[in-house]
Image (cartoon, rainbow, N blue to C red; front, side, top):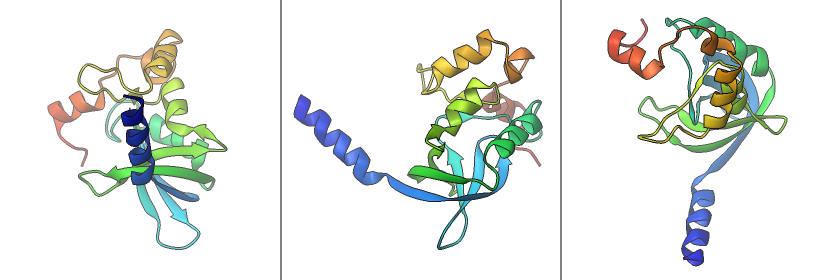
Length: 154
């Protein structure tokens, strides 16, 4: 059993890549563009969170919070895969700190749920809810439900 865990951990590390660069643009509360030292900017969707849509309540505040935190700063991205929109999915860190965890803890995004799981940032979301921070201080609809009801933002 332990051998299987080691093999799975090695496979996970082998499939992940690292990217480092400067954030040149923030699209919304969970998507940003990172320009590596060599090459074109890469569109990155932060793994594990779901931020409000741009046209949704709290969408502008979420985007502004992320921009204030990372725009024009050097970040590291541990990439995982590409999504259906060809964005790179990954964990973004700034000075060694997980940016997605910060976004959820400050009330600018939800921990992305997976079936019955509350997602990787459930503890940070619980803190934000308890402290009534950001979007947890107002009635807010999760982006998945918003998209079902209204479709994508224009």
